[in-house]
Length: 378
Image (tube, rainbow, N blue to C red; front, top):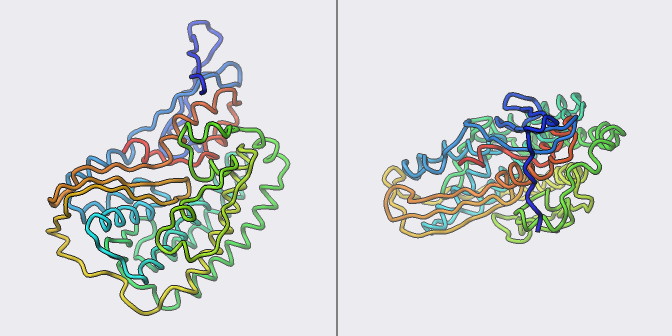
């Protein structure tokens, strides 16, 4: 067991309290770090998650099932599709509705496109945190190309509200496969440039290797999932270990590392982007062109979901994402709990790893854990 960080006596005069965020380019989302420093070394860290995009679980209890779709998208802004899917999946499990095969393939395509877009934003963030602004410009530009595809597919760039109970809202547009493959080719070419400019960069290696090491015994104790766990040597991925949608029909590798530092976490995510492109090409090739994309549904404006409870989970870019829902047979959710990786990674883990870190590396450490504050105060 790990001992809690000892309390710092600020009255001694040796320490200085600093705030990083909430408005700071080195902060993931609208949150803040309360840092206590001695010289340029952090001796204590407290997280403050702020008030932007908060209180979703209680909001959802006061709306009908169909009215919650515009809400769940906001829980993880850079990757709202995972919330769309999980909300739809948990409602489907409680009602016994089955999504058609065509919709399952389109959903998988949607999720992996979102994963790639989210990773591109994250990759730019880790580059910028260590002075590589060029990488940020590259990756955000290519993320916009993927948002163009989402706009074409769903009618919206960020909040799509495309995956609904029973399937998806529409078929893929004509010519979408060719345009999507073109974007994938451009992103793949970019990734090789990023490897040369960022991952082979001496300064980036010097500053990230050994930064924020997560000991393997911390993984289960702190509830660490996703790339943060795989960078510590754990071969765990819900897409392989508890398959959903059509992941059991796709070929992909679970990427791991052993160093468990900021560089290893970055490398794992970088390699997972290549795996994502690999899966997307399979989806584009194998998604059925004919057949229903939406199951027969009741009147969703007066939809009484049977009483029950269930938990549905999926692998988002940051690890296990889950929805626990309780219903009482009415038109409203009785209780819903959203399990996102950020609560553990951005609070318990960040506060632990920040101690002993240089102030200049705080932003890079935080980005390497990949968190979204709205998941924390739900």
